[in-house]
Length: 415
Image (cartoon, rainbow, N blue to C red; front, side):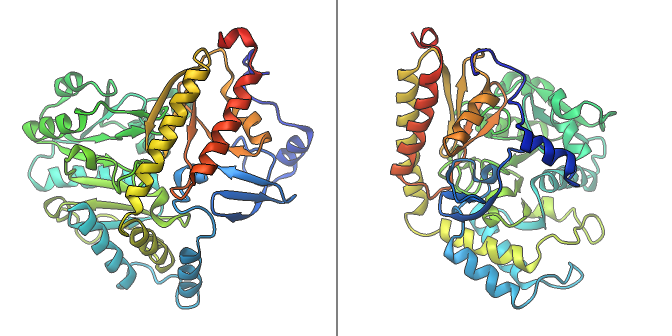
């Protein structure tokens, strides 16, 4: 099954019947399984089966499932107020914005509902900031090859992979791509037409690839030299996933704009853009908006996430368990050198790049059949995105399940 590499796993008859009968648009290759409950790092299906969740809703369930503080905060807020729109002050926004500004060292926050909205807003803000400085020719956003910044038309232009673009052209102008992690190529592309460089310190969808250690500091220096801004796309790598609240922190740079979403509210829809004051001041009433963005429910959940991640020792413990996972993955590669070509990523955004003879979709399905949930990514990479609360025993279980599938591959592949 995994050696012959078909185009993808075949749907069983029940899944086919669902696809035919369902009124839900078929934009997802869904597995035929429905979950009704979650506990920590585990999901429980309609049939009562338990699955170890190393997908976290694609890096969303920061504290796992049904975390008591998140549940309590949402129940309390749901009994008070859900929505008023941004025509009025939302006190929860003011509190969460102060937390984000303080934790990032930046100044202003715009709230939205998703990662694509956050990156789209980041681009708008960067271009508007240039316009307000009298540099209206600065409209281009430099992105990396293999990046993924969202599925709006604008963010498809920021994403160079044909898989996401085909059938949706023409792409909006104003985006250019440079080789991933190549600082010389980035410098060659900079000029008076560039408004900002948008960068993921770890490309999640792109295969859990991390930039070289000195790359972000080089990006910051080059952007400053050429008068461009730096947008840190922290949608997947941020909110503690790499062991720091923001994945760029280890490089000791300060971006001008930070895009957040996914894990910020632990599973409740949210997006946010943090900016410096000089950049944020370019946005005035009417220049951007969101009907649902920053609603009281999202703010209640985000406040809990930021408070928990800011507690003494929480992220240090995440980093310690991430080292444990790293050692386990390296051990797995040593055990199966022909099947695993590379271990990638940082923290709990990890990738296991499989040999091209192994069908990734079938591999993921086989793990799911053994009650382990993972996420596929580019370059034949198995992505591990567990909740930040995963225990060492649960890490051991996940590694054991992956090893069991690798042993099923014909023996000559692992010699």
